[in-house]
Length: 171
Image (cartoon, rainbow, N blue to C red; front, side, top):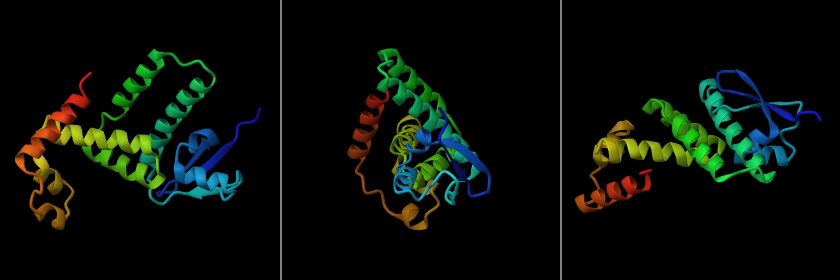
């Protein structure tokens, strides 16, 4: 059986040979593949994702595509679910700015699972663990409009969010 692949080119012109099943984890690529736009003889340029992020994103997609394929074959156990969660937790342990780039890449490629994972990581790090609060988080993104805007959460609302986030991330 021949392997169906697609070639993806990052914004810095590195080319990645990716299995179709892995690429289909991206809703953007999935639409392109299913519409016939991305035939197997064409390299798709992905201008919103650099090579470092493309490698990380495709690693995430491959792990999750393999996990789903195992489930379809009926070979998944409760331990496999724990294993993918543990893998995700290790995968997302990265520098804050790397995680922000992952968010950007996941949004561009429309990979909901990765986007959720990365956003939860940022939220957990900034609002729960470091208790930096909304104004500091807003200022981190260097947006004058956002950074200078007043905190629209009252103290009780911020505290409630911290409590909910802490509860949702305890083992």
